[in-house]
Image 1 (cartoon, each protein chain N blue to C red):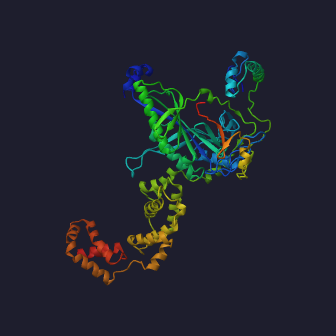
Image 2: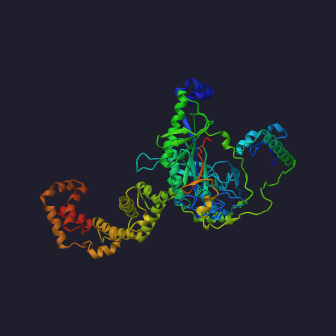
Image 3: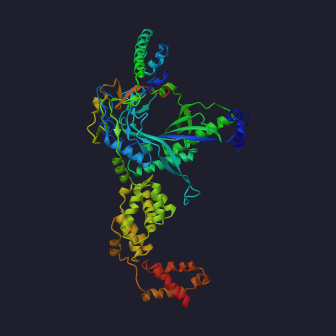
Length: 516
Length: 112
């Protein structure tokens, strides 16, 4: 590229930039700060209850409200889950860490400081495996690891709602356990950021550490974005982006901000200054928040009310043993051990509940039936029904009438030639209404496949082969097109009300045609 | 821990020179409106505190673990068992103004 070859000539890019600005190639450098609320029943430093969706200010206590004389006591489960998050993402867990006060004045924090971790975070390093979009839906995209800097454990702050003349404060969220995951400036496009957010959410939800619903504020993301000429190694002036409330919103905001910065540099329309910008999801633009630099002077100091935490090797081993595999590891296992195609694994694996459902259904076949058949029923029939049941999105798996046992038994019945795939469709329709087990439905409705070559079936096959309507297809079959005989299957299956064994009919057809 | 002279800690400058303390900046961070007289008083007092820090800095602490506590205690943790929250009436009792069970504050925007 032009930028690189000119840089190679030993000139400084700043100088080059002035002359060649419109022709320079720019790259974006992006680092993220992802906040994740841990799934606990009570708050981080007090036992006030915490969960989403309660009436304002009904989940507080004197500690949350920063009343004089109160003392914080740390939540064991929050520390345990934060350490589990670190282990999950391959971080080094600090053998000892402490908590600090981050001092600032803002109504979201009633005690005028937030308890956080400054210089001794709980987790260091680590990485998140991401997958870029593939060339098509059934082809796996490129994978790579995004490096993490650190993860620390802190308390969430209250929620402000702004009105024309005043603002309202709800402290329900204040004090909830919150992990801040900081990445290295390791991403270079909005699509990579999207892949990162998707991957980290799937991993954390799978491990049961958080529900990561961005619209409920359980996962939030700030992005630091700068651009620089390709080939330059120093980082450009960074802009911090806030207020992105969905994973797609993060992608759109980052894409917009990169475009804005590159345009400004190429056309010299404005100087990129270090600032905080807010994503406006309605206008789809970022806007300066005009924050004063001194508001970032947090004067951290160790919180004298909290003792340090030490996590032993034994505890870490226990945490590691209890964690499920990461979604991408699960996907590789499904592809290798079960020979499932990428398309099916990319539906099952990112969704932990669905993969648990699949494994339970597979176990319920008791070895009778292909994993692929089980996966197909889940990814096609089951998800179709669950989506149809809900106006928007998908009904929860827990509400499904069809259980793993239903699917396992159905697949086993097909495998044992008790019913055909065609009849299985009727059984599915029946069991998704009544919830009856497939074997019961087959028994009660007399759906069992006819076995053996009864004279009736033989006559039916002979009549079909003799039918001049199928002369052409039979001709094609004789010319070597095996599939041509499939057109004769339909009428036979119909005549037997789907109870005939398709494999058996194919054999009989072949015999009849070859013998004729 | 030896902090170099001029190192910024807690928003203050550690220095022997009294003029390094920016009392206006410190007051602004603490949201305090001070009269000129108060500024002089607090600047003098803060400088004495910083002077004391310099004394502490002079002590050789090579090889001593920094700590915020005098007790060798770790892992003071509580089980994740929620207790009754504070009734909403009590929550709002100290608020100068409330509406819709929320606390009313002057319009705050991030660019404050």
